[in-house]
Image 1 (cartoon, one colour):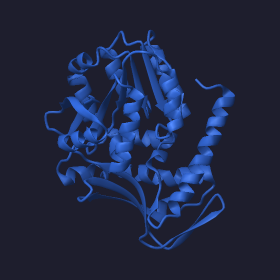
Image 2: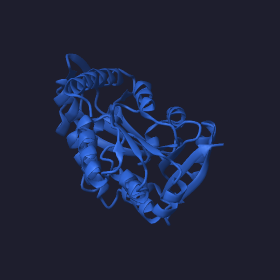
Image 3: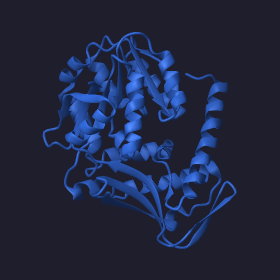
Length: 324
């Protein structure tokens, strides 16, 4: 793990990047906030709660695929010598793979939250004592972080594990860039194991992002609480903004928004931001795919689907993408 000084530098860099991203996003004609900033400690706890909701099928369905198809997936991955996981979070899903790959030598988790990474590594060392774990604290969308990971990689076949339908948070151009970056990280003999949420009934999709208990609404609004806490802002989180989720048919995606309940001015680290009543802050996209659209995206990144595993209802897919 990083030294105390390195950790302080990392946190300082993260603060300035966070501030820049927030100010930049809120100055746009269509105000935006990057969804990666949902995940402070409270946001991570709220997301864990979301994953247990009846409406939120994504996490439990992907887990079910990794469990029920674990032996088949492990056979397909048996020749790989290290797993790299960008956005590793709590490292829970990768443990299902590690249990099926007991002789895997190395695992490299890349995670923006230093605290989450430290906690996850402690757990991994307890459960997989023979596994060599080389954590990297950073943002997988930053090329410098991917370059750092590359320096840790050894000769052999690399698997990049990218679960959770995180690819859905990016528009097509961005998603293509992410796939190309991860393909380069995997190397010429490597592959990408990708989790993706699939198109389904619109009401089920909407319910997954706007649950009856309001946990997702609190998760969405928590980004404002984090900005208040970390960037000395004064958003009226409880009464100033409301959560909204819509399905954009043309772009095949759920869009999460925060809608201003009244005209107001917010101060963020000394910068004043004006909002009119009904103005929207776009906080997250979650694109939904078909197997065909995954194949097309992979092809544009000069990859193809080698294997695919789905749940019986076809709600979610895990795809092994490799060289054409």
